Image (tube, rainbow, N blue to C red; front, side, top):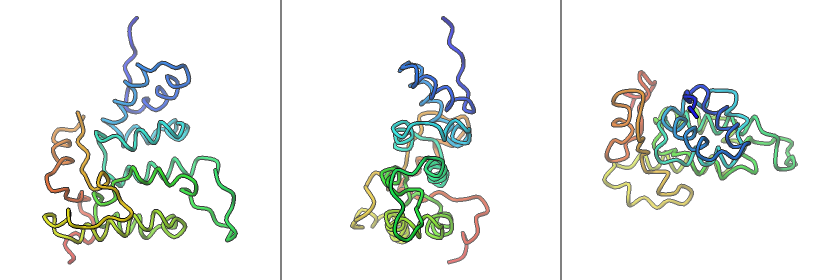
Length: 200
């Protein structure tokens, strides 16, 4: 039988279908396409319908080809689209990550562009609602403030060593993207034209 090509735009829907049917080989192919083209693949509406184990597996993938801000946004969008697993807090407000804190362990916050880390993550409503998110993002800011050669000496309380290690994509549809993602020294990614890049 001939196999249909899996496109980045259709990979989430194909993965969901393969998962439902128990077709592991097709599911693995879909996961590989999503990992290589994550930012495009996670924008598909079907991404929000993926079961938690598939989302966790994708976010944890060390070969994921994506900016870490996009990984965080994908985790947030997915969590917001799910029914809440935990009862409402006494304060009445629930965060998207309540009961789903394990998703955050797959986001490599220290490798985000500093502007995105401070403005998009620490400055978000979600950080105000989630102590785990706030602790991880605050520790990532501290990690970024230390010179790369001294970073191994930073004592991590909330982040794992994996979260401080650059992902290494297997293949990329954009020339040079894999080389940029795998920069030595674990340098945070830069947002082209990002505000505050020259302000020190």
